Image 1 (cartoon, rainbow over the protein chains, first blue to last red):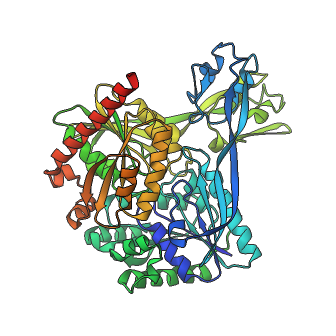
Image 2: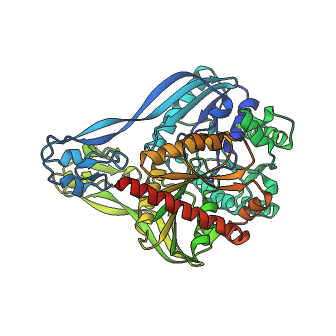
Image 3: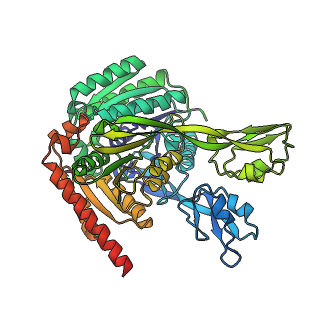
Length: 293
Length: 288
């Protein structure tokens, strides 16, 4: 079983639109949306939810006003400034439980935290595992790990060859959780100075975790000078550029209709996206290691 | 006044709006820009600051003095993040998992744990063309951006208009960046993805009790559902930037609207005045 994660560092470079097209192009796969705090893949794949599961993760401190003597020790020792006026701000509380252990009158108890939901769904393209982190909740890395575990379990049970992961932007915990042990990271960049800067950082993270990388330049015709910068950067880094996809309003039009762009009208974008999928597939078959757990 | 610029969805133009706003206001106000997108800080590309101060960001992590340690296991028991394991005659600290809460060192019965510092990022400050500039950078391979964001925000100057560039999403780094703001400006695009993530961003701002307004970027590209949503939810649309290849090209070269198309400056000044009115009204109604 091979796992592909689509990343970008910078947001809005086209990860989800590309994953939606891969969903239409790939055979025998499971889809996983690991952008758990701003998930969008479902807007194109239109899942029918089969299983809705609560995601309980971490704890939050609660002060019993009746017992509290307002000694202030918890406020003094909390490193996250989560307690003020003898009340816990659940948004700042990191669930360390230090306060509950040092309270001299045992007025603080820890409660489990409902941090979100994860879903197993059917789509016309195959099974999709996705999630919804609660508003202003923590622990997105753990929720990503849960989504990936479920996707692997389905792939194993149904004997599916590929897991295609829509990754989150950035380089922090949900990204690290999305890329560990995958067969290949496809990094989608755009020819803007921000895109190039963020490409460099996300490639460094992939390298840090020993994940093979291939690069795709989206909206390449916005600035061809910058494309040359990306090409020389990739050459220096020993990275292969797998595809250059032009800017085309067909991408947004398809998104508005809620269909993958490869199923919309014939366009250079859909043709290039098909070539991109062929290339990624070839790499994974030939060189991509099996997903490691 | 603190104005944070957030979005939910990535790539909608947060940094372009934040930096253009900063440069449009610098002639009339003292302006400071804090780049709290510490995973992918890009505001420096647009502002080109001269950095004159670099400070590492540390979190405290435990160090066990094995001479005093009796391997009782208390530290491992109290650690909520499984960052300490006590084996027979040995203590393992997984400092990458540590949040620096201090429970283990405080609760160790032998006082065998002291705290040492672990670097997880860097804060850079300087000046850019009349704007005070601070950015945080999370070290590659580190998972937790919030301690770095907290340090950036400690640099906020009370005497300035503080503009915060926020990372995409709605989870802990976004909350850490926007909390304590007087206003949250949400930049979106008129597409289904833009709308879906705008709704989440509005819910986040509302949960934190921060008034918000919307900037629609790339207007004309998708459909009208974002506008409908804003009207239904009574969220003011404060600025509209059209889809335009000239603007896209400027953006690609790291040039703000204030510099590349100076006519936009007055629109950003008006945007700032509008934010001022909303914040003022909110404070008055709160007092009433």
